Length: 112
Length: 113
Image (cartoon, rainbow over all chains, first blue to last red; front, side):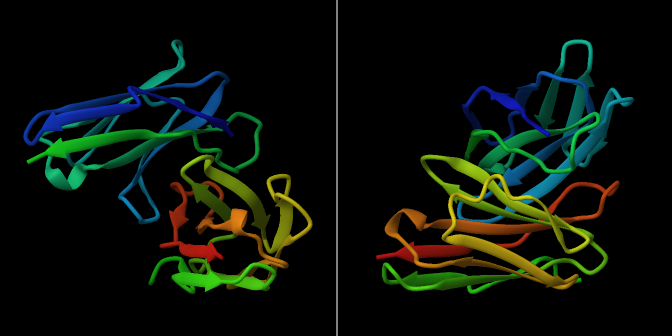
């Protein structure tokens, strides 16, 4: 496992706007995962994209993966106040263990 | 399934006391992880088990911390003796290798005074 590095570290937008969060990593991966954490709660798994996939959708979420650039992005469309949370990306490395090491995350604030 | 269940939700204890945190993973998951989260250090992996066997405990801060998984449906994290710097939210998570991500519990907020 390796930490992803989320960028930006904080983002503030208005309700209805789209939010894009980026993630970079360093080594070859099996998959990349995005998690959300609402204040005071546990992390919630949002989406997993495998190394042979380039794009994946789940509801208002769209994740892309560019293994040549070692980067991923998470797009939340038509954001809502309830999307206010911290978002983490984390990777499962090739040949590595299944443990996930989380970085600092990215704080998204959606203003009503 | 009720998800990953942690108890207690909140624990306040005095320095020097023993603290035991409990976790029930999702049935069928074969890996279990203990994390600690603080503002200063973020989310730290303490230890993880696979098929009830500890695989990596390199994140356990010191000998005061110990974890057990006597069977597939139960794990404990014990701190003895506790210190104020152990104050944090402790999360348990479980997963199935080859599955889709971890499932986290709601956490135990520990305050050591």
